[in-house]
Image (cartoon, rainbow, N blue to C red; front, side, top):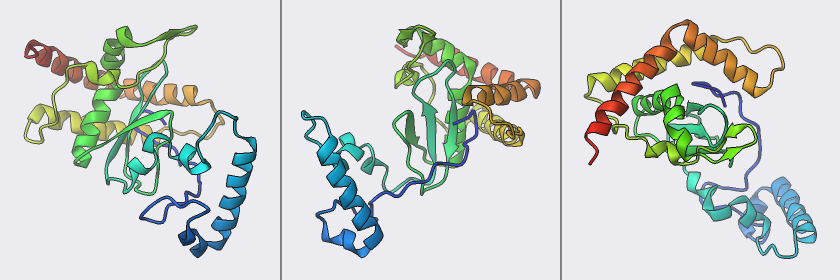
Length: 225
């Protein structure tokens, strides 16, 4: 999860057949013999070793509060952002076969332009700055963003608004810059994010995005009762 860029996702097999999640007791899982055998063994292992107070099945744990099935079917355009960290980081997700894990937040966008508009807003340093008063503070400073990012008064995307389209084009430029950053060395994700942020600053795109978003926030704040 990088600014304006996603690394290749981890691979996993999810017992979902396009209609529902399949437990070992579901006859439909037998259509996939390898999965069926593995999943039933996993369920047995889970039941043997889960905490005594845990009532959830393995499938219930995987789909806790329906956070997995809520992602099916996946929308063509999603915005993904980090739930915690020093800097808010966001990117567009267009892979319908990908699911978002619990350390990230996601939202459906109505179009690629709207998704880019939102990632520009979320990656803007001013947004991280405005969210900080709401964050919990740990040993290394403010940590969790959660849904506090939506406390900031920003306008809903309007495809007819020239300023909104300007931010979309800036996000598109930022994606190209982020994609061009070489990541050959085995670096920690914090260092990789730093490389991309410095590249965006060097190209002047980061400052321009921040300037536009700052103007949005200031203008919209004056219209909030």
